[in-house]
Length: 561
Image (cartoon, rainbow, N blue to C red):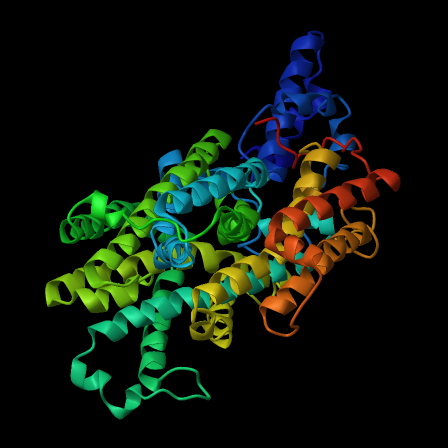
């Protein structure tokens, strides 16, 4: 409305409003112009201390207004999915953020990770200590990376433009997307296994269930995988609001079903004393040799989401809501890890052998009612985790790559297709391949990206971003750097990844032996790459004089939060 008044009522201009009572008139003009700026130019950020803009709204406002360009992002850099969120879209409360984590934590991969620690030789309490320590450490980058999402309403692909450059941001977002596609395939395969268990025995014994070496699985299991793959897409098609509702109402159901599983193990094993009777099979030196790669694996388990958490915090109502929501991660993860470790340990007492896979455990339990409830729980847990953790980031990355061709839906569809290409059934063959090759391996990609993004946002820019420049291809923009690429960030990313490659090649069976130094680096891949890349980027920025410069107070820059 204010914009129309300024267009058609010249008597509201600053010149005609200045009368003998100039102080009152100037104050009124300043308020009118500040309101005009807020409504016309800055529709995406919540109303805050716009009084700081009033010096621009003086008797020369008509001249100054021409310098305040409206939010007109380059069409190749944005679409409806990449624009900053509006106040009306910021609906996630602290509980809803916490519910997101419950839905993410209560899932088969979390259970499988906990069970793998027992399978590899840890006692139950050692496994819990490892998981909780990892998630407390992860809480720091999680909250720090979530801050710009809530403050500016921007997603991770847009935030990455600040450190990597307008065009260079494609590299970290695509690396993150690649890992997300792999996880999407893993989660979907688990859901497909749950469907397979429900099938009648005569179907399981048919020729379609015969293993095919070239495929790596049977046609029947692959068909179940595709069925679950399609089912998830129906939820993804509803967008972020559908995901929010799913996580909100699934959380209490998942808590109840998890409690039922723990109760079953308690009764069958004869109490917690028997359930937790398995002691560590590791000597002191063997434990520490396993502890550090396990710590890295647990950090990298959520390092994917810690990197793209702005995709969710941009919908949070406030910084307090996003912090409260994230604070529940170590608690929820610790509690669910206890369930996973306790139930896995109880299988040694109940069945005479350790069963770390919940899918295989369900086959042993039997009983139609139990099976249906269990499969429902696994399917719900898998969907809530998979969609939130492994669809949103890759989809947004693809949208960022080509906003004119990709929407969130199209990005999600391509993510799902790439998930099949990862052949997840091969990644889940053993605990070693899951923990050492997959989890530890991809942490070398995500660690340096996180270190660079946080060093840029907090150490270089002191949390100040120009939202307008994040959507601009102007060579004079704050984040254009060299042709849209920040060479310092590219170099730091490369140097952060290179030292981890020998260890990855050894674990992948490509090379037989490597120097012990590279083994230590690989076992601590996330820590090493995170701090190395972050330090190198910060140092390069200081040496090249790219320290924080005072940004012009443009209308797209919000006040303090």
